[in-house]
Image 1: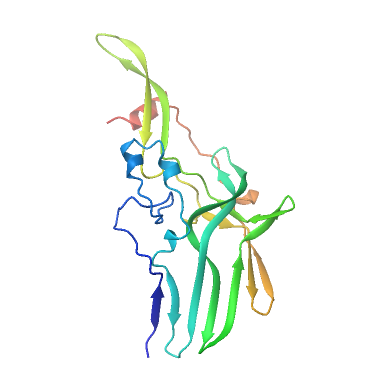
Image 2: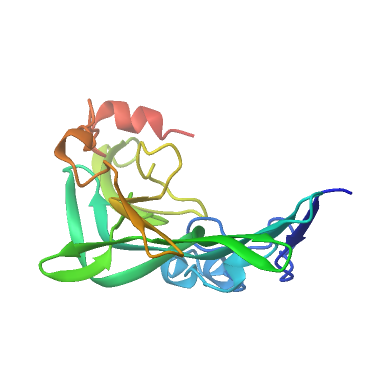
Length: 232
């Protein structure tokens, strides 16, 4: 007898296929046209897809003893977003999807009998309403622009103001210091098949002691150190 592993049958795309959402998970949508148009629609084009992100995920483990564990997944959701410096936590109009999966349920089966099923919910109460307790660790920036002033020599000998535009397939900004967890949950409830449940409360951006700190230095496009950093 051996261990057996079963995976979601949706195939993943080719490596570097440009079919990923903002967090790098498969979404079945090719965003190449956004790259060709210099990226102004990059954010909107890279939306998460609840079905495609489950491609090739582990769904079942069969044990040599005859038992099985089945995993059910669902997309990450969030109701609040951690804003970068100056730090705040912004409430969204409604729950929204984020890339990546979380566990919805774990079922342990012995023979043909369900021995145990645990279901997980990720909600909290905000202003009297139930919403996702997820906090998104930041919003990606694939595009930014600004102005800078540079001195131009002969034959002009004057300061000239330039407007610059920058586009990227990867976010310009580091989202947060959350060890790669782009969504953190304040509350998670684990419910057993007998009706009993356990509520877990975790610290994250909603707690003031866990908030991001201000940067030590902020460079202006007119700062000499900034100009030196962007020289080619």
